[in-house]
Image 1 (tube, one colour):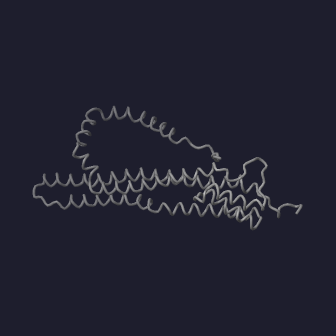
Image 2: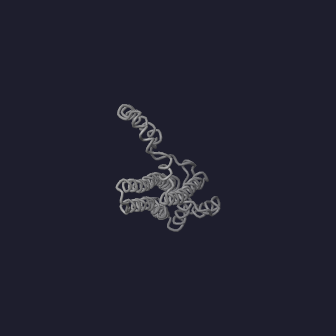
Image 3: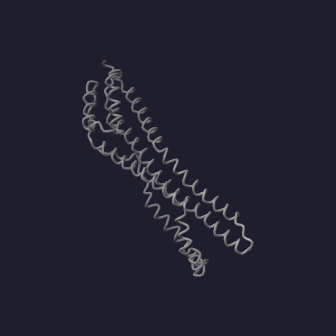
Length: 264
């Protein structure tokens, strides 16, 4: 069973397209009027093949590419794991029929059913259900089961956050590497010892281009990586939230609590 969204999701990509159309429609006329063909020709002249090669193929840029690729592969594996975890919602782990109740004597058979369906593979949802049913078999108290489910959700979130430590470091390391290139370029610009002023200015400008190009590439990669990190983190947090919602609907609300029954 697929969990429905608890709220209507924002159509972010559609809104991005609308934003691009609005900004492009407003900026294009000003660019055409204020810049004109002369500015475009001057821009193309500055960004020749040699400048583009220096921009993308410096040693610091290659180090940034390595960090970016490493982090992207980690995030891809984490996102694939989220997709795998979603399969647990379609395994019929708990009774979903209207009016179905779970009695204390049903807890252990249901727990064995969960283990059988998941083949002991690690699933966030199955783990919450298994721990909740185990607590219910012992305490026969619905509030105790709710506490176990809530605590396990916190544990799963903490585990997911700690698992992102390497990616968080790489997100910080990429701009740091770019600033290392900036420092190297600035040091080369002011360390040039040339008697001719024109030659000194030319060499200094070349070094400054290296400095700022390193920072530019690093910041662009960092922006993309931060977005990918945000997407994966949101998917993982939504997974845990949907697992809690599933347990609330199909486990906690169906438990029979003898202590709350006035006839007992």
